[in-house]
Structure formats: structure tokens, C-alpha cells
Length: 385
Image (cartoon, rainbow, N blue to C red):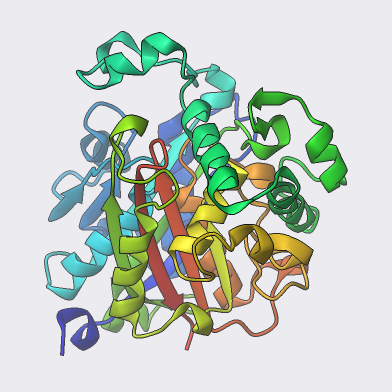
């Protein structure tokens, strides 16, 4: 029996920061408010926290967050940076740390004011012009959409995937967002609207692309003994995995197979389940093509079948595989790194707290993070059983 089987780990608190446009807070105050709310759900307080997992929160992320919260001597810290997938990876690392007694109460979180600060850059900074990147940037490949557009174009070339099929992913996200009062975009949207939106980087259009918002969130993990005292239903982490492939598009062995193939195999293998056992999935939807490749590489359908798989409303309310149930990065919120919000939505669905968008008696959910230029992946399998 492995450590995580002998010593199961639970998510016992989950809270969003303020979302959308947050002009009157700092990222640290946003993080702090969410952390206190999540800890209250857990029946814990800041003094109980001995593990901090975050990134993008200052030059030395866990140090600044810990100081702001008053956690000055944590037993375990981790600022692993694999982009938007980092928070699923942090759950993986926290799971191992708690199961092995390196800490007992861990917070995983992030906050951003990228919309209010107008800080998102679509060009590569000079400091990032590495030995390999210098062969891409001078030719005008825009960051990051150019890389995703090339992946989409290649998928279309290899497998016959269409813009209409990608549009169905955006429509599914919007239909879920219409059921979420916190979603940034809730107005009706059709596939025709997606196809009529402006081409940003062929073949991706404006409505194939995620939002740019402020936001973030915090989750709390702990062991079985302390989870018994939680104020809300604990959600068990069954399995997790992570991997990455390449940074520069020219260095990857394939444009259409992603790191999700490895992270998914690890997570499902640890959990002892298969994609067929999953009731819903929260795939990272930075772009519509991100969702399609994840569904293939995680094993929900075969490689090349993603376009047909997402058609007919399969991911939308009432579909066979509910996905992006908060509205996702395409319609709900995308604060630069979406991964922690995927974890929060998975927890809420498994607790039965999702309001109008609540699924009927889900037992197993998956949160799947992606980072970089479709470079990294981390997958977490959870259950309420």
C-alpha cells in the first residue's frame, strides 16, 4: 500500500478571490481573503497552516504570501512554476507532503490583477530570447496565441478537425457560464457567433480565446484525521500527475500530442480509475484547441477524434461529459493562470454546491491544468465517495 493510500489527503476548503475587475484590492489582500474563507470552511485558521504552495505572487512567492498571512515558519513550501498547470501540480506535491508527514495543513492558491493592471503581454520579453526562441520570435510568432494556432492548424491538417467543432467548445463554456452568476460573460452565444468573430491568429478567432480578468482562489488540503473536523464535506484527492514537453514550438516531437498523455496516465493510475469512470472534467480552456487536445490525451476519446467527440453538445449542460461547468477560462474567469479555479469548481460540484449548474450526484471529477505554450500539464482526480 502506498503512502497516499495509507494516509489519504482531502481538500477541506475552497474559495475564490474577488473576480473580474478588482480595482480596490492588492493581489495579497485578494489571496488573504480567499485563504481565510477556505480555512473557515475547513474548520481551521491561519495558525494551523504549515504548508504553502503558490507562484506568481512576488519574487519569492511562498515567502511573501507567508509573511502577509503571518505564517513565518512553514514546514513545507513550493513555488513550482509550470504555468497555469502549477496548481494541479501543487496539489500533487501537497498530497505527497501530507501523506508523508512533512506538513499537515497546506494552502494552494494564487491571485492576479492582470486586467486592472493591464499587465498581460502578448510579445516575448527580451530576457526570454533564449538560444532556441531566437529562431521563432524574429519571424513574428505571437505569444502565446501563435503557438496554439499552429497546434490547431496542424490538428485540422492531420485529423480534419474544423473551426465549427472548436466553436462548439466555446458555446458549451458559455452555456455553463449562463448558469453561473459569477461568470464574466453570460450573454447568449452561438457557434455562428464564434465563427463570425474576428480572426486573431488563423485559425483561432476572438471567441476561441480566453478572457483576461482579475481573480484567483485558494484551496486547503489536510490529512484524514483533521479532515473530520471540516465544516464542509471533505473531498478526497484520489490521484495526481504532471509532465511537460517543450517550450518552443519547434522543439516538440508532436504538435498534436501534449503532456496530458503522461499526466493523465499518472493521475488515473494512482486513482485506480479510468476516464470512463469520470462524471465530469474541468479542462484548462485557454483556447478551444487546449480543451480538444486535453480530452484526447487524457483518454476521453482517441487521438484525432476530439472534433467529433465535442460535437452535439457533449460538453454542454445535459451532455454526456459535462466540462467547464463554471464557464471556464472562455466565459467565467481567466486571471492569467486558471488552474486553481478548476480545482475549486471540481470541489464545488463534488460537494453539491454549484447552484443552477449543479450536476446530478457526481462521484468522480477531474481538474486538468495546462501551462506555457501547451507545454505543461498536471491532472488531479477527486472523489466525494
